[in-house]
Length: 125
Image (cartoon, one colour):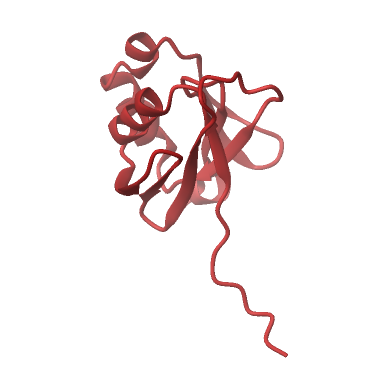
């Protein structure tokens, strides 16, 4: 019996598919493959599938967590790219959380909430 896993990917909903693909590319994700319904996006070893939900609203809050090596650099990059202003999305600045991560919040154009952070133990090194 072999129960070894290879990978897990979330299907992230996008109500405006083309706008969301552009947002994620500008956030730093690569887009090697896309159809009318799905797009495969990755940055480093992290990936997800963006799903075209054809203009329907995201009904329940959908949340992703991205653990990165340097949260300060990611926060700086989001600010330099002016993603909040250009895409009309919500951000919250980095904050140390009781679960041991310094993270910031970035909503995507469909309302998907991303928590992007670095382990406080990593920061202390």
